[in-house]
Length: 235
Image 1 (cartoon, rainbow, N blue to C red):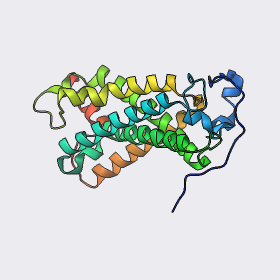
Image 2: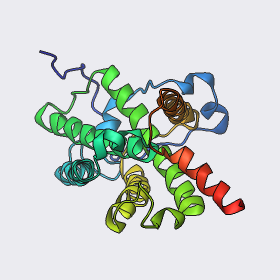
Image 3: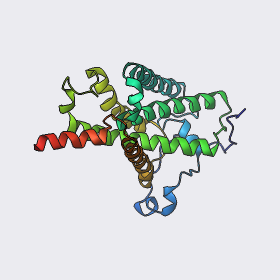
């Protein structure tokens, strides 16, 4: 059985966990494309807590994880539509919300059950960091695209991809808001060059959509739906 242990680190002497911003010169060094970080415990803490462990942050992590995963499960059940729920970019990003938020909650929980010097394996931290940055960027891009270019054309009753007003707000508005707030709360750093990870995610979806339609499947992923609506407006 795989066990969640990844070594120890010296206890921080700092009274807080606020991240020090990098200079632009340092930010754009090629090594910043990577996912290495000198203090993995930053991914287990809030930058506003004063002690190594915070029960408030732990509870918050589970509230966020529970919120998105309960919503995700109910959404998939209600709009499964013979599996076509999984072909849309919006839903791919929404699934990422669930994975990222629950992973954060699990990691913080394990940390609270371990000594303060415990840190997760580096591969876990790197994967979580890539998922987190991909989620927040993709959700912001999807929200901007949807509300600026697609809404309200997709709200017509004849739209086969239409969802209820509740879930429309849940998947197109709440994720970027909640994850932006979360990004202000957490102690983990942000790296500008990590734009490559949401880019890989976007290209992966584009490849999937291309193969999906080449195989003769039906459905309207977000990218196709967007251009369809734009074409209708011009006609």
